Amino acid sequence: MLLLRRCHGLTRFGHVHIQRHHLPPAVLSHAARLCSTHDNTSHRHLSGFSWKHGLAGLLAGAGAVIAFGLHRHEAEHPAAAAAAQTAESSSSLPVFGQEEVSKHRSLSEGVWVTFRGGVYDITDFVAMHPGGEKILLAAGGALEPFWALYAVHNQEHVLEILSEYKVGELCAEDLKKQEPAESSDPYSTDPDRHPVLRVNSLKPFNAEPPPEILTDSYITPSAFFFKRNHLPVPQVDPASYQLQVEGLPGGAVTFSLEDLKTRFPKHDVTATVQCAGNRRSEMDREKQVKGLSWGISAISNAKWSGARLRDVLLAAGFGPDVAQWARHVHFEGLDKDVTGAAYGASIPLNKAVSEEGDVLLAYEMNGEKIPPDHGFPVRVVVPGVVGARSVKWVGKIAVSAEESSSHWQQYDYKGFPPGTDWNTVDYKSAPAIQELPVQSAITSPADGALIDSSDGFLTVKGYAWSGGGREVVRVDVSLDGGQTWQVAKLRSSDEAHEAPPPPGRAWAWKLWELTAPLPPPAQELEIICKAVDSSYNVQPETFPPIWNLRGLLSNAWHRVTVKIIEG
Image 1 (cartoon, rainbow, N blue to C red):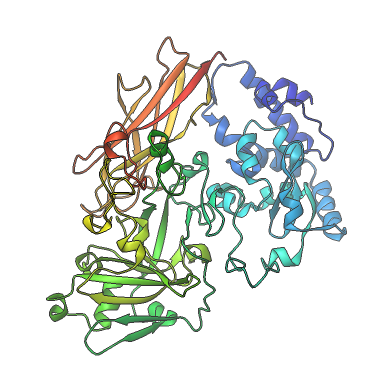
Image 2 (tube, rainbow, N blue to C red; image 1 turned 135 degrees about the horizontal axis):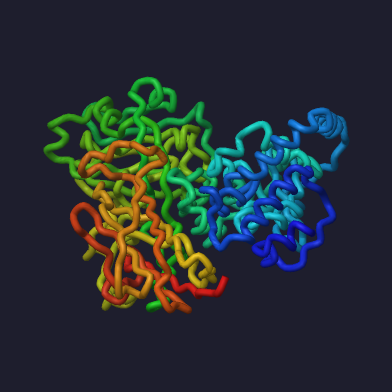
Protein backbone atom coordinates (compact mmCIF):
# COMPACT_ATOMS: atom_id res chain seq x y z
CA MET A 1 0.00 0.00 0.00
CA LEU A 2 2.98 2.29 0.51
CA LEU A 3 3.69 1.90 -3.19
CA LEU A 4 0.10 2.85 -4.03
CA ARG A 5 0.30 5.96 -1.88
CA ARG A 6 3.55 7.07 -3.51
CA CYS A 7 2.23 6.67 -7.06
CA HIS A 8 -0.57 9.20 -7.40
CA GLY A 9 -1.50 7.79 -10.80
CA LEU A 10 -2.62 4.54 -9.21
CA THR A 11 -5.30 6.05 -7.01
CA ARG A 12 -7.74 6.29 -9.88
CA PHE A 13 -8.62 2.67 -9.14
CA GLY A 14 -10.03 3.74 -5.79
CA HIS A 15 -9.27 1.98 -2.51
CA VAL A 16 -7.64 -1.37 -3.20
CA HIS A 17 -7.17 -4.17 -0.68
CA ILE A 18 -4.04 -6.18 -1.40
CA GLN A 19 -4.39 -9.59 0.12
CA ARG A 20 -3.69 -12.30 -2.43
CA HIS A 21 -0.05 -12.30 -3.48
CA HIS A 22 3.13 -10.30 -3.14
CA LEU A 23 5.68 -9.29 -5.71
CA PRO A 24 9.37 -9.94 -5.00
CA PRO A 25 10.98 -7.16 -2.93
CA ALA A 26 13.30 -6.18 -5.75
CA VAL A 27 10.36 -5.55 -8.05
CA LEU A 28 8.52 -3.44 -5.49
CA SER A 29 11.55 -1.41 -4.61
CA HIS A 30 12.44 -0.74 -8.22
CA ALA A 31 8.85 0.22 -9.09
CA ALA A 32 8.72 2.47 -6.03
CA ARG A 33 11.87 4.25 -7.12
CA LEU A 34 10.36 4.85 -10.55
CA CYS A 35 7.17 6.17 -8.95
CA SER A 36 9.20 8.49 -6.77
CA THR A 37 11.00 9.78 -9.82
CA HIS A 38 7.66 10.28 -11.51
CA ASP A 39 6.38 12.33 -8.55
CA ASN A 40 9.42 14.59 -8.67
CA THR A 41 8.95 15.44 -12.32
CA SER A 42 6.04 16.68 -14.35
CA HIS A 43 6.89 14.64 -17.42
CA ARG A 44 5.57 11.36 -18.73
CA HIS A 45 8.89 10.06 -19.95
CA LEU A 46 11.80 9.20 -17.67
CA SER A 47 15.16 8.88 -19.38
CA GLY A 48 13.41 7.87 -22.58
CA PHE A 49 11.22 5.30 -20.79
CA SER A 50 7.49 5.52 -21.59
CA TRP A 51 5.15 5.04 -18.64
CA LYS A 52 2.43 3.69 -20.88
CA HIS A 53 4.56 1.05 -22.53
CA GLY A 54 7.06 0.50 -19.74
CA LEU A 55 4.54 0.11 -16.93
CA ALA A 56 1.52 -1.20 -18.77
CA GLY A 57 2.60 -4.41 -17.13
CA LEU A 58 3.18 -8.04 -17.58
CA LEU A 59 -0.02 -8.52 -19.55
CA ALA A 60 -0.74 -5.58 -21.78
CA GLY A 61 2.37 -3.40 -22.01
CA ALA A 62 6.07 -3.83 -22.62
CA GLY A 63 6.75 -5.22 -19.13
CA ALA A 64 10.24 -3.75 -18.78
CA VAL A 65 9.89 -2.82 -15.12
CA ILE A 66 8.68 -6.23 -14.04
CA ALA A 67 11.20 -8.06 -16.18
CA PHE A 68 14.01 -5.92 -14.75
CA GLY A 69 12.82 -6.41 -11.19
CA LEU A 70 12.54 -10.17 -11.61
CA HIS A 71 15.98 -10.35 -13.17
CA ARG A 72 17.45 -8.62 -10.12
CA HIS A 73 15.43 -10.76 -7.73
CA GLU A 74 16.67 -13.98 -9.31
CA ALA A 75 20.25 -12.73 -9.39
CA GLU A 76 20.13 -11.91 -5.69
CA HIS A 77 18.12 -14.96 -4.57
CA PRO A 78 18.63 -17.79 -7.10
CA ALA A 79 18.00 -20.54 -4.54
CA ALA A 80 14.68 -19.02 -3.46
CA ALA A 81 13.52 -18.70 -7.06
CA ALA A 82 14.39 -22.31 -7.80
CA ALA A 83 12.67 -23.50 -4.63
CA ALA A 84 9.51 -21.59 -5.47
CA GLN A 85 9.40 -23.11 -8.93
CA THR A 86 9.85 -26.62 -7.52
CA ALA A 87 7.16 -26.05 -4.90
CA GLU A 88 4.69 -24.90 -7.49
CA SER A 89 5.30 -27.82 -9.81
CA SER A 90 4.75 -30.31 -6.99
CA SER A 91 1.65 -28.62 -5.55
CA SER A 92 -1.91 -29.66 -6.28
CA LEU A 93 -3.90 -26.71 -7.63
CA PRO A 94 -7.68 -26.55 -8.11
CA VAL A 95 -9.24 -26.86 -11.54
CA PHE A 96 -11.48 -24.06 -12.86
CA GLY A 97 -13.82 -23.84 -15.83
CA GLN A 98 -13.75 -20.94 -18.28
CA GLU A 99 -17.15 -19.84 -16.97
CA GLU A 100 -15.64 -19.28 -13.52
CA VAL A 101 -12.61 -17.50 -14.95
CA SER A 102 -14.86 -15.17 -16.97
CA LYS A 103 -16.55 -13.96 -13.77
CA HIS A 104 -13.31 -12.33 -12.62
CA ARG A 105 -13.00 -9.24 -14.81
CA SER A 106 -12.76 -6.38 -12.31
CA LEU A 107 -10.81 -5.31 -9.24
CA SER A 108 -13.90 -5.88 -7.09
CA GLU A 109 -14.47 -9.42 -8.35
CA GLY A 110 -10.80 -10.21 -8.87
CA VAL A 111 -8.83 -10.18 -12.12
CA TRP A 112 -8.17 -13.66 -13.52
CA VAL A 113 -6.54 -14.66 -16.77
CA THR A 114 -5.51 -17.92 -18.42
CA PHE A 115 -2.23 -18.82 -20.07
CA ARG A 116 -1.13 -22.20 -21.45
CA GLY A 117 -3.73 -24.05 -19.44
CA GLY A 118 -3.05 -22.26 -16.15
CA VAL A 119 -5.36 -19.87 -14.27
CA TYR A 120 -3.81 -16.76 -12.71
CA ASP A 121 -5.21 -14.25 -10.22
CA ILE A 122 -3.38 -11.01 -11.02
CA THR A 123 -5.64 -8.65 -9.07
CA ASP A 124 -2.89 -7.24 -6.88
CA PHE A 125 -0.57 -6.83 -9.84
CA VAL A 126 -3.18 -4.77 -11.72
CA ALA A 127 -3.73 -2.55 -8.66
CA MET A 128 -0.04 -1.69 -8.52
CA HIS A 129 0.33 -0.61 -12.13
CA PRO A 130 -0.46 2.67 -13.93
CA GLY A 131 -1.23 0.55 -17.01
CA GLY A 132 -4.09 -1.13 -15.20
CA GLU A 133 -6.81 -0.12 -17.66
CA LYS A 134 -5.09 -1.99 -20.47
CA ILE A 135 -4.29 -4.98 -18.29
CA LEU A 136 -7.99 -5.23 -17.44
CA LEU A 137 -8.76 -5.79 -21.13
CA ALA A 138 -7.31 -9.29 -20.75
CA ALA A 139 -9.39 -10.07 -17.68
CA GLY A 140 -11.48 -13.22 -17.83
CA GLY A 141 -9.77 -14.51 -20.95
CA ALA A 142 -6.55 -15.72 -22.47
CA LEU A 143 -3.24 -13.88 -22.42
CA GLU A 144 -1.84 -15.37 -25.62
CA PRO A 145 -3.31 -12.82 -28.08
CA PHE A 146 -2.18 -9.93 -25.88
CA TRP A 147 1.33 -11.32 -25.84
CA ALA A 148 1.21 -11.43 -29.62
CA LEU A 149 0.86 -7.65 -29.41
CA TYR A 150 3.58 -7.27 -26.80
CA ALA A 151 6.16 -9.83 -27.86
CA VAL A 152 8.68 -8.82 -25.17
CA HIS A 153 6.75 -11.05 -22.76
CA ASN A 154 7.72 -14.18 -24.61
CA GLN A 155 10.77 -14.61 -22.39
CA GLU A 156 11.41 -17.20 -19.71
CA HIS A 157 12.02 -14.78 -16.86
CA VAL A 158 8.71 -13.00 -17.56
CA LEU A 159 6.88 -16.33 -17.58
CA GLU A 160 8.39 -17.14 -14.20
CA ILE A 161 7.00 -14.02 -12.55
CA LEU A 162 3.58 -14.84 -13.94
CA SER A 163 3.83 -18.21 -12.17
CA GLU A 164 3.78 -16.42 -8.79
CA TYR A 165 0.13 -15.56 -9.46
CA LYS A 166 -1.01 -19.03 -10.46
CA VAL A 167 -4.12 -20.19 -8.59
CA GLY A 168 -5.25 -23.20 -10.59
CA GLU A 169 -5.58 -25.08 -13.86
CA LEU A 170 -8.12 -24.64 -16.65
CA CYS A 171 -10.29 -27.73 -17.01
CA ALA A 172 -9.41 -30.04 -19.90
CA GLU A 173 -12.75 -29.51 -21.64
CA ASP A 174 -12.33 -25.75 -21.83
CA LEU A 175 -8.66 -26.06 -22.66
CA LYS A 176 -9.58 -28.11 -25.71
CA LYS A 177 -12.47 -25.78 -26.46
CA GLN A 178 -14.87 -28.67 -26.65
CA GLU A 179 -17.69 -27.46 -24.50
CA PRO A 180 -20.86 -29.55 -24.94
CA ALA A 181 -23.55 -27.80 -26.93
CA GLU A 182 -26.99 -28.55 -28.27
CA SER A 183 -26.84 -29.88 -31.80
CA SER A 184 -30.09 -28.08 -32.62
CA ASP A 185 -28.30 -24.75 -32.45
CA PRO A 186 -26.48 -24.12 -35.76
CA TYR A 187 -24.07 -21.87 -33.89
CA SER A 188 -23.24 -24.49 -31.24
CA THR A 189 -19.90 -25.36 -32.85
CA ASP A 190 -18.76 -21.77 -33.32
CA PRO A 191 -15.26 -21.21 -31.91
CA ASP A 192 -14.53 -19.46 -28.63
CA ARG A 193 -13.70 -15.78 -28.84
CA HIS A 194 -11.66 -13.51 -26.62
CA PRO A 195 -13.81 -11.56 -24.13
CA VAL A 196 -12.03 -8.30 -24.95
CA LEU A 197 -13.96 -8.10 -28.23
CA ARG A 198 -16.92 -5.74 -28.31
CA VAL A 199 -19.82 -7.81 -29.56
CA ASN A 200 -22.34 -6.39 -32.03
CA SER A 201 -24.12 -9.68 -32.69
CA LEU A 202 -23.81 -13.12 -31.09
CA LYS A 203 -25.55 -15.23 -33.74
CA PRO A 204 -24.02 -14.78 -36.22
CA PHE A 205 -20.99 -13.57 -34.35
CA ASN A 206 -19.80 -10.05 -35.16
CA ALA A 207 -17.38 -8.15 -32.97
CA GLU A 208 -14.55 -5.64 -33.02
CA PRO A 209 -11.54 -4.97 -30.79
CA PRO A 210 -11.40 -1.97 -28.44
CA PRO A 211 -9.94 1.01 -30.32
CA GLU A 212 -7.24 1.48 -27.67
CA ILE A 213 -5.52 -1.77 -28.70
CA LEU A 214 -6.34 -1.69 -32.42
CA THR A 215 -3.28 0.34 -33.38
CA ASP A 216 -0.84 -0.99 -30.78
CA SER A 217 0.49 -3.31 -33.47
CA TYR A 218 0.81 -2.87 -37.22
CA ILE A 219 -0.20 -6.51 -37.66
CA THR A 220 -3.46 -7.34 -35.88
CA PRO A 221 -3.35 -10.63 -33.90
CA SER A 222 -5.99 -12.99 -35.24
CA ALA A 223 -7.79 -13.12 -31.87
CA PHE A 224 -8.33 -9.35 -32.04
CA PHE A 225 -8.97 -9.10 -35.78
CA PHE A 226 -12.56 -7.95 -36.19
CA LYS A 227 -15.05 -10.78 -36.74
CA ARG A 228 -17.68 -10.43 -39.47
CA ASN A 229 -19.79 -13.54 -39.94
CA HIS A 230 -23.05 -13.73 -41.85
CA LEU A 231 -23.83 -17.37 -40.98
CA PRO A 232 -22.64 -20.10 -38.59
CA VAL A 233 -18.94 -20.94 -38.78
CA PRO A 234 -18.70 -24.22 -40.75
CA GLN A 235 -16.75 -27.22 -39.50
CA VAL A 236 -14.36 -28.13 -42.32
CA ASP A 237 -12.07 -31.16 -42.33
CA PRO A 238 -8.83 -29.99 -43.97
CA ALA A 239 -8.01 -33.54 -45.07
CA SER A 240 -11.17 -33.82 -47.16
CA TYR A 241 -11.43 -30.15 -48.21
CA GLN A 242 -12.04 -29.61 -51.91
CA LEU A 243 -12.08 -26.34 -53.84
CA GLN A 244 -14.12 -26.57 -57.02
CA VAL A 245 -13.38 -24.24 -59.96
CA GLU A 246 -16.08 -23.96 -62.61
CA GLY A 247 -16.87 -22.08 -65.81
CA LEU A 248 -13.66 -22.81 -67.68
CA PRO A 249 -12.98 -24.98 -70.77
CA GLY A 250 -12.66 -28.63 -69.86
CA GLY A 251 -15.22 -28.58 -67.07
CA ALA A 252 -14.95 -28.31 -63.31
CA VAL A 253 -11.58 -28.82 -61.64
CA THR A 254 -11.04 -29.55 -57.96
CA PHE A 255 -8.06 -28.77 -55.75
CA SER A 256 -7.34 -30.13 -52.29
CA LEU A 257 -5.71 -28.08 -49.55
CA GLU A 258 -2.53 -30.01 -50.21
CA ASP A 259 -2.76 -29.09 -53.91
CA LEU A 260 -2.96 -25.41 -53.06
CA LYS A 261 0.07 -25.73 -50.81
CA THR A 262 2.27 -27.84 -53.07
CA ARG A 263 1.28 -27.13 -56.69
CA PHE A 264 1.41 -23.35 -56.50
CA PRO A 265 4.02 -20.87 -55.23
CA LYS A 266 3.23 -19.46 -51.81
CA HIS A 267 2.75 -15.70 -51.82
CA ASP A 268 2.58 -13.31 -48.87
CA VAL A 269 0.41 -10.20 -48.94
CA THR A 270 -0.02 -7.81 -46.05
CA ALA A 271 -3.50 -6.40 -46.50
CA THR A 272 -6.08 -4.50 -44.50
CA VAL A 273 -9.65 -5.79 -44.47
CA GLN A 274 -12.43 -3.33 -43.68
CA CYS A 275 -16.13 -3.98 -43.29
CA ALA A 276 -18.39 -1.80 -45.44
CA GLY A 277 -20.18 -0.81 -42.23
CA ASN A 278 -17.12 0.39 -40.33
CA ARG A 279 -18.03 3.54 -38.32
CA ARG A 280 -21.75 3.00 -39.02
CA SER A 281 -22.63 4.03 -35.46
CA GLU A 282 -21.48 7.59 -36.23
CA MET A 283 -23.67 7.83 -39.31
CA ASP A 284 -26.57 6.42 -37.29
CA ARG A 285 -26.25 9.33 -34.84
CA GLU A 286 -26.87 11.68 -37.76
CA LYS A 287 -29.99 9.77 -38.83
CA GLN A 288 -31.04 6.20 -38.14
CA VAL A 289 -29.64 3.52 -40.46
CA LYS A 290 -30.11 -0.23 -40.64
CA GLY A 291 -27.23 -2.55 -39.74
CA LEU A 292 -24.82 -3.66 -37.05
CA SER A 293 -23.65 -0.77 -34.90
CA TRP A 294 -19.94 -0.92 -35.75
CA GLY A 295 -17.58 1.53 -34.09
CA ILE A 296 -14.23 2.47 -35.59
CA SER A 297 -12.66 -0.99 -35.27
CA ALA A 298 -14.36 -3.01 -38.03
CA ILE A 299 -11.00 -2.89 -39.76
CA SER A 300 -7.81 -4.89 -39.18
CA ASN A 301 -4.50 -5.70 -40.84
CA ALA A 302 -2.86 -9.09 -41.33
CA LYS A 303 -0.18 -10.92 -43.27
CA TRP A 304 -1.95 -13.41 -45.54
CA SER A 305 -0.22 -16.33 -47.23
CA GLY A 306 -1.41 -18.73 -49.90
CA ALA A 307 -1.75 -19.41 -53.61
CA ARG A 308 -2.53 -16.60 -56.01
CA LEU A 309 -6.02 -16.85 -57.46
CA ARG A 310 -4.52 -16.04 -60.84
CA ASP A 311 -2.26 -19.10 -60.71
CA VAL A 312 -5.12 -21.41 -59.73
CA LEU A 313 -7.38 -20.09 -62.50
CA LEU A 314 -4.61 -20.56 -65.08
CA ALA A 315 -4.10 -24.13 -63.90
CA ALA A 316 -7.84 -24.74 -64.19
CA GLY A 317 -7.94 -23.63 -67.84
CA PHE A 318 -8.25 -19.85 -67.90
CA GLY A 319 -6.78 -18.29 -71.03
CA PRO A 320 -7.19 -15.46 -73.56
CA ASP A 321 -10.27 -17.09 -75.08
CA VAL A 322 -12.06 -17.01 -71.72
CA ALA A 323 -11.10 -13.37 -71.25
CA GLN A 324 -13.08 -12.54 -74.39
CA TRP A 325 -16.41 -13.28 -72.71
CA ALA A 326 -15.83 -13.55 -68.96
CA ARG A 327 -16.28 -10.47 -66.76
CA HIS A 328 -16.57 -11.74 -63.18
CA VAL A 329 -15.23 -14.36 -60.79
CA HIS A 330 -17.69 -15.75 -58.22
CA PHE A 331 -16.82 -17.11 -54.78
CA GLU A 332 -19.08 -19.32 -52.69
CA GLY A 333 -18.41 -20.13 -49.06
CA LEU A 334 -19.02 -23.34 -47.16
CA ASP A 335 -21.08 -21.42 -44.61
CA LYS A 336 -24.77 -22.00 -45.23
CA ASP A 337 -28.10 -20.84 -43.83
CA VAL A 338 -30.92 -23.15 -42.76
CA THR A 339 -32.12 -23.43 -46.36
CA GLY A 340 -28.69 -24.52 -47.57
CA ALA A 341 -27.93 -21.22 -49.31
CA ALA A 342 -24.25 -20.29 -49.04
CA TYR A 343 -22.66 -16.91 -48.61
CA GLY A 344 -21.43 -15.65 -51.98
CA ALA A 345 -19.85 -12.69 -53.74
CA SER A 346 -17.96 -11.79 -56.90
CA ILE A 347 -15.21 -9.47 -58.10
CA PRO A 348 -14.34 -8.15 -61.57
CA LEU A 349 -12.30 -10.57 -63.69
CA ASN A 350 -9.49 -8.09 -64.24
CA LYS A 351 -8.90 -7.85 -60.48
CA ALA A 352 -8.94 -11.63 -60.15
CA VAL A 353 -6.42 -12.44 -62.88
CA SER A 354 -4.15 -9.40 -62.79
CA GLU A 355 -0.57 -10.05 -61.68
CA GLU A 356 -0.84 -6.79 -59.72
CA GLY A 357 -4.22 -7.64 -58.17
CA ASP A 358 -2.59 -9.84 -55.50
CA VAL A 359 -5.81 -11.80 -54.86
CA LEU A 360 -5.01 -14.81 -52.69
CA LEU A 361 -6.53 -18.13 -51.78
CA ALA A 362 -5.06 -17.82 -48.32
CA TYR A 363 -4.45 -20.72 -45.95
CA GLU A 364 -2.29 -18.82 -43.46
CA MET A 365 -2.88 -15.69 -41.39
CA ASN A 366 0.03 -14.05 -39.59
CA GLY A 367 2.23 -17.09 -40.19
CA GLU A 368 -0.24 -19.66 -38.81
CA LYS A 369 -3.14 -21.64 -40.23
CA ILE A 370 -6.19 -19.42 -40.58
CA PRO A 371 -8.44 -19.62 -37.48
CA PRO A 372 -12.03 -20.86 -37.93
CA ASP A 373 -13.56 -17.39 -37.55
CA HIS A 374 -11.39 -16.11 -40.38
CA GLY A 375 -12.02 -18.83 -42.95
CA PHE A 376 -10.17 -22.07 -42.11
CA PRO A 377 -8.93 -23.85 -44.10
CA VAL A 378 -8.98 -21.49 -47.11
CA ARG A 379 -10.40 -18.04 -47.69
CA VAL A 380 -10.26 -15.47 -50.46
CA VAL A 381 -8.36 -12.26 -49.73
CA VAL A 382 -9.10 -9.45 -52.19
CA PRO A 383 -6.75 -6.57 -51.26
CA GLY A 384 -8.08 -3.04 -51.59
CA VAL A 385 -11.69 -4.21 -51.85
CA VAL A 386 -14.51 -4.24 -49.31
CA GLY A 387 -14.25 -7.16 -46.90
CA ALA A 388 -17.57 -8.62 -48.09
CA ARG A 389 -15.84 -9.89 -51.25
CA SER A 390 -13.06 -11.72 -49.38
CA VAL A 391 -15.18 -14.85 -48.98
CA LYS A 392 -14.24 -17.12 -46.07
CA TRP A 393 -14.30 -20.94 -46.12
CA VAL A 394 -14.35 -20.75 -49.90
CA GLY A 395 -15.58 -23.97 -51.51
CA LYS A 396 -16.41 -22.93 -55.05
CA ILE A 397 -15.04 -20.49 -57.61
CA ALA A 398 -16.76 -19.79 -60.93
CA VAL A 399 -15.73 -17.69 -63.90
CA SER A 400 -18.80 -15.99 -65.42
CA ALA A 401 -20.05 -13.32 -67.78
CA GLU A 402 -22.45 -12.20 -65.05
CA GLU A 403 -22.04 -10.90 -61.55
CA SER A 404 -22.84 -13.24 -58.65
CA SER A 405 -26.55 -13.62 -58.00
CA SER A 406 -25.92 -13.92 -54.26
CA HIS A 407 -28.11 -11.86 -51.95
CA TRP A 408 -25.00 -10.18 -50.55
CA GLN A 409 -23.90 -9.13 -54.03
CA GLN A 410 -27.28 -8.02 -55.37
CA TYR A 411 -29.29 -6.84 -52.35
CA ASP A 412 -26.72 -5.61 -49.88
CA TYR A 413 -23.39 -3.77 -49.78
CA LYS A 414 -24.46 -1.05 -52.19
CA GLY A 415 -24.45 2.71 -51.76
CA PHE A 416 -27.42 5.05 -52.26
CA PRO A 417 -28.00 8.81 -52.09
CA PRO A 418 -29.22 10.47 -48.88
CA GLY A 419 -32.73 10.88 -50.24
CA THR A 420 -33.29 7.17 -50.79
CA ASP A 421 -35.35 5.41 -48.10
CA TRP A 422 -36.70 1.89 -47.65
CA ASN A 423 -39.83 2.76 -49.63
CA THR A 424 -37.92 3.96 -52.68
CA VAL A 425 -34.71 1.92 -52.70
CA ASP A 426 -33.99 0.00 -55.91
CA TYR A 427 -31.01 -2.29 -55.42
CA LYS A 428 -30.70 -2.95 -59.14
CA SER A 429 -29.98 0.74 -59.71
CA ALA A 430 -26.67 0.78 -57.82
CA PRO A 431 -23.42 -1.09 -58.41
CA ALA A 432 -22.01 -3.44 -55.79
CA ILE A 433 -19.33 -1.90 -53.59
CA GLN A 434 -15.82 -3.02 -54.55
CA GLU A 435 -12.99 -0.56 -53.78
CA LEU A 436 -13.54 1.46 -50.61
CA PRO A 437 -13.02 5.21 -50.12
CA VAL A 438 -10.24 6.76 -48.06
CA GLN A 439 -10.67 6.29 -44.31
CA SER A 440 -9.05 7.27 -41.02
CA ALA A 441 -9.96 7.29 -37.34
CA ILE A 442 -8.56 8.29 -33.94
CA THR A 443 -7.89 5.34 -31.64
CA SER A 444 -6.34 7.36 -28.80
CA PRO A 445 -7.45 9.37 -26.90
CA ALA A 446 -10.97 8.05 -26.64
CA ASP A 447 -14.01 10.26 -26.94
CA GLY A 448 -14.72 11.77 -23.51
CA ALA A 449 -11.23 11.06 -22.16
CA LEU A 450 -9.70 13.23 -19.43
CA ILE A 451 -6.31 14.60 -20.47
CA ASP A 452 -3.69 15.61 -17.91
CA SER A 453 -2.30 19.00 -18.92
CA SER A 454 0.78 18.83 -16.65
CA ASP A 455 3.34 18.42 -19.44
CA GLY A 456 1.50 20.66 -21.92
CA PHE A 457 1.47 18.09 -24.72
CA LEU A 458 -1.05 15.68 -26.20
CA THR A 459 -0.39 12.53 -28.24
CA VAL A 460 -3.03 11.44 -30.75
CA LYS A 461 -2.92 8.06 -32.53
CA GLY A 462 -4.96 6.34 -35.19
CA TYR A 463 -5.10 4.46 -38.49
CA ALA A 464 -5.62 5.45 -42.12
CA TRP A 465 -6.32 3.38 -45.23
CA SER A 466 -7.69 3.72 -48.74
CA GLY A 467 -9.13 1.16 -51.13
CA GLY A 468 -7.91 0.19 -54.57
CA GLY A 469 -4.25 0.09 -53.54
CA ARG A 470 -4.14 3.87 -53.20
CA GLU A 471 -1.52 4.74 -50.60
CA VAL A 472 -2.34 7.12 -47.77
CA VAL A 473 0.11 9.99 -48.23
CA ARG A 474 -0.99 12.31 -45.42
CA VAL A 475 -3.11 12.46 -42.28
CA ASP A 476 -4.12 15.90 -41.05
CA VAL A 477 -4.97 16.33 -37.37
CA SER A 478 -6.65 19.26 -35.69
CA LEU A 479 -6.69 19.85 -31.94
CA ASP A 480 -9.04 22.83 -32.13
CA GLY A 481 -12.09 21.63 -34.03
CA GLY A 482 -10.66 22.21 -37.49
CA GLN A 483 -9.38 25.77 -37.11
CA THR A 484 -5.75 24.72 -37.53
CA TRP A 485 -4.18 21.51 -38.81
CA GLN A 486 -0.96 19.58 -38.25
CA VAL A 487 0.45 16.65 -40.22
CA ALA A 488 0.80 13.33 -38.36
CA LYS A 489 3.77 11.00 -38.64
CA LEU A 490 2.90 7.89 -40.67
CA ARG A 491 4.09 4.33 -40.05
CA SER A 492 3.66 1.73 -42.78
CA SER A 493 5.09 -1.35 -41.03
CA ASP A 494 6.82 -2.63 -37.93
CA GLU A 495 10.11 -2.51 -39.83
CA ALA A 496 12.11 0.71 -39.59
CA HIS A 497 13.36 0.69 -43.19
CA GLU A 498 10.72 -1.18 -45.15
CA ALA A 499 10.46 -0.14 -48.80
CA PRO A 500 7.26 1.67 -49.83
CA PRO A 501 4.67 -0.42 -51.71
CA PRO A 502 4.61 -0.31 -55.52
CA PRO A 503 2.23 2.32 -56.93
CA GLY A 504 -1.33 1.06 -56.86
CA ARG A 505 -0.54 -1.83 -54.52
CA ALA A 506 -0.68 -0.17 -51.10
CA TRP A 507 -2.94 -2.81 -49.59
CA ALA A 508 -2.14 -2.21 -45.91
CA TRP A 509 -3.10 0.60 -43.58
CA LYS A 510 -0.87 3.32 -42.20
CA LEU A 511 -0.70 3.88 -38.47
CA TRP A 512 -0.19 7.50 -37.52
CA GLU A 513 0.75 9.57 -34.49
CA LEU A 514 0.97 13.23 -33.58
CA THR A 515 2.41 14.75 -30.41
CA ALA A 516 1.69 18.47 -30.17
CA PRO A 517 1.33 21.25 -27.58
CA LEU A 518 -2.08 21.65 -26.03
CA PRO A 519 -3.81 24.76 -27.42
CA PRO A 520 -3.99 27.47 -24.71
CA PRO A 521 -6.29 28.05 -22.97
CA ALA A 522 -8.07 24.72 -23.30
CA GLN A 523 -10.67 23.06 -21.11
CA GLU A 524 -12.22 20.95 -23.86
CA LEU A 525 -10.80 19.97 -27.23
CA GLU A 526 -12.42 18.63 -30.37
CA ILE A 527 -9.78 16.49 -32.07
CA ILE A 528 -10.29 15.72 -35.77
CA CYS A 529 -8.44 13.58 -38.29
CA LYS A 530 -8.74 13.28 -42.06
CA ALA A 531 -6.66 11.25 -44.48
CA VAL A 532 -5.50 11.98 -48.02
CA ASP A 533 -4.58 9.19 -50.47
CA SER A 534 -2.25 9.09 -53.48
CA SER A 535 -5.07 10.19 -55.80
CA TYR A 536 -5.67 13.17 -53.46
CA ASN A 537 -9.00 11.80 -52.38
CA VAL A 538 -9.85 13.20 -48.96
CA GLN A 539 -12.51 12.29 -46.42
CA PRO A 540 -15.68 14.37 -46.49
CA GLU A 541 -16.16 16.80 -43.62
CA THR A 542 -19.59 15.67 -42.41
CA PHE A 543 -22.04 12.76 -42.65
CA PRO A 544 -25.20 14.33 -44.16
CA PRO A 545 -23.88 14.37 -47.76
CA ILE A 546 -22.86 10.69 -47.57
CA TRP A 547 -25.73 9.37 -45.43
CA ASN A 548 -27.35 6.21 -46.78
CA LEU A 549 -30.02 3.90 -45.42
CA ARG A 550 -27.60 1.01 -44.73
CA GLY A 551 -24.93 3.16 -43.08
CA LEU A 552 -22.20 2.01 -45.47
CA LEU A 553 -19.06 3.85 -46.62
CA SER A 554 -19.06 5.92 -43.43
CA ASN A 555 -15.84 7.90 -43.80
CA ALA A 556 -16.46 11.50 -42.73
CA TRP A 557 -13.83 13.27 -40.63
CA HIS A 558 -13.42 11.40 -37.36
CA ARG A 559 -13.94 13.53 -34.26
CA VAL A 560 -13.41 12.97 -30.54
CA THR A 561 -13.94 15.42 -27.72
CA VAL A 562 -11.69 15.36 -24.65
CA LYS A 563 -11.58 17.37 -21.43
CA ILE A 564 -8.38 18.93 -20.10
CA ILE A 565 -7.68 18.64 -16.39
CA GLU A 566 -4.94 20.15 -14.25
CA GLY A 567 -2.13 17.73 -13.43
